[in-house]
Image 1 (cartoon, helix red, strand yellow):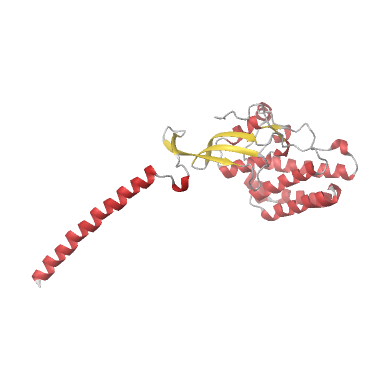
Image 2 (tube, helix red, strand yellow):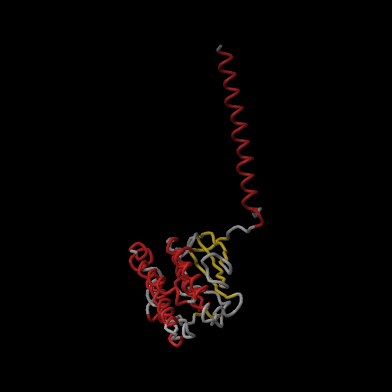
Length: 267
């Protein structure tokens, strides 16, 4: 028994385990991982590169393109981002087809209502977003005047929501000075919640003006223009989800391509 237990166990446990665990693990774990991580790009997708963060430490930098076709995203807008984690550290904005503005008396305001729906969806309020899209469809099919009462009801509902107010308050607040420096329209001043309320106010006023036959006071006039030159600066330092909220709040269906679309922004 002594011979069988000691010698047999020693041989099976020490020699066998050493061969299986040390040699086998080193070959499969170290050599295999080194080959996979350093020499291959899974699915042909390049791995993240290294870059310094704000503290001077090296972090992975991932290149991501958003748009031009993306749910609840301004049509035609492309945002090229460099990400550290989920934070945008460098960005470049452009339009794939030049001017995205449309001057059609029906389509323009309906697109404004669609922007409201996108912002509500990105904020996580799917029910209100669906209601806004129904109002948009009514405006397209029956004329804007028919959507007036529904749009006013949506505006009151949004204003009553403390949860929505709390979630959007303070998100990318813009002062008068900063808005002017970025050549943004006056209604961009404030935070994301202020801009949402402004979008609703303009939509309600525009629908009311149309119902009264007064097209001279329409709120989607040529004075509201945005430039891609400055869009990238607005999302620097934000995570992707917040950046999408900010862009949606700017009512970008009025956006105009800037003179320096391909200039990279460093903040």
